Image (cartoon, rainbow over all chains, first blue to last red):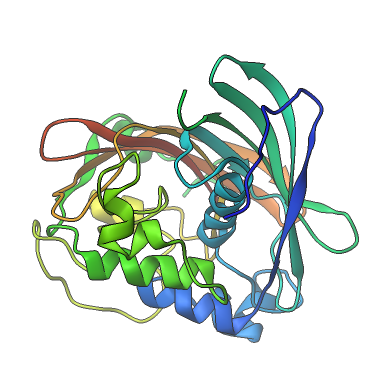
Length: 136
Length: 172
């Protein structure tokens, strides 16, 4: 697993983590989280909720933010705090780009802004996290 | 329901009262493995989530679950199996308390704030309890919306906090 080889620095941009989205992803997530809700399964239900298509689970975007944090800081890094706002729906076919920037560094611990944006650069789900680095 | 507010006196009265109290079945390796496959799709998930020999050499000394793993997804040991239903009741919270909800059609997950404690591992039995922190309203592009913040706390069989989440739901 890729991870930062040296201590992070404030302002450091973290390599983006990309996921395509659609029923292949959402159905697998529904199968493990028992999240079979019309808005995630049916374009008409997504339209009725005010969006152009069905849209993905916020919980899955949440999972992707965690995956990215471990991609950046290693699988043994410990996420102690994470938060996110789901500002726009992840509609079917959206390519999600999970990006991050280091906002604070303390001994053995970093704060990051982490967010999901679409290919047009619109932030769909801004968030932040605190991560304890492995070995610290 | 009042024209001026979605928040009834009955709804105000449930703020702070526990609900959704449940105890999970013991977490299994298979539960963790399948969860990791789903969230890492289409990639192969890290060995930490499915290879016991590999995981033993990690700082965790064995397999752990991804932080976002949900041991209550399909069923719980307590209160036990319930009937499955198609669709989603946007008033599920008020229905749980036996009161009338606002009757709105859409309920969206608007965000989460989570503090994590102990990692979940195979064999863990997780307990959960939730309560409403607040009901508020605001106007958005879909008109008047009801904002509900629910705090959920999970603990493991040793009484250690696994996570505490404040989740915001928007109904319209």
